[in-house]
Amino acid sequence: MSKALNWDGEIENDGADAILLPEGEYHFQVLGYDRKWSQNKQCPMARVKMRVVTDDGTAVVYDTLLLHSDFEWKLCAFFRSTGLRKHGERVVMRWQQVPGQWGRFAIHHEEYTGRDNEKRVGHKVKHFLDRDDAPPPAWCLEPVPAQAAAEPAAGTEPEEECPF
Image 1 (cartoon, rainbow, N blue to C red):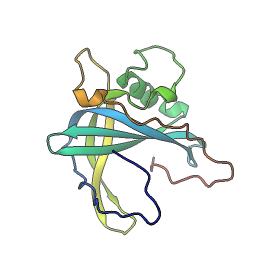
Image 2: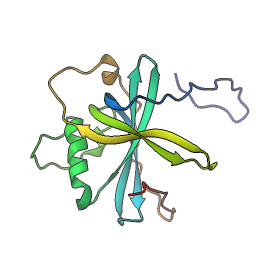
Image 3: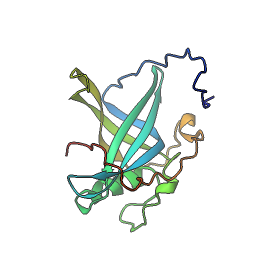
């Protein structure tokens, strides 16, 4: 169970080692998202945090969704995958309903350079898959902690964004 720690509290949990999923298709559950601003496209963007549970452990996958007409197709695919939109349907993006939703996506590996200038390999969402009628794994239906609407504070600098 997660909890707040005191400034002078004791710590010991080193955390689980991150796992790199093989490339392929997976169920995911949305843990939350952060509202950010894209300097490149001059538009809002959502950094979505999703989890995938496998026999080898739990992986966390992030994807950036730009709220821009050039990327409307990706927004539509994400909302279809999470069951919040049907194909061809015009909907209002209801971001407050996104945490806790489940869907499917295909991932591949992408090499990147970390802040320490070390080369690493991470997950990259290749595409979101339409939801089918099959029930999801039980872990996809577990509740996630509530998320407050994360509006950027006035006067704060925008964070770095995805490189496209």
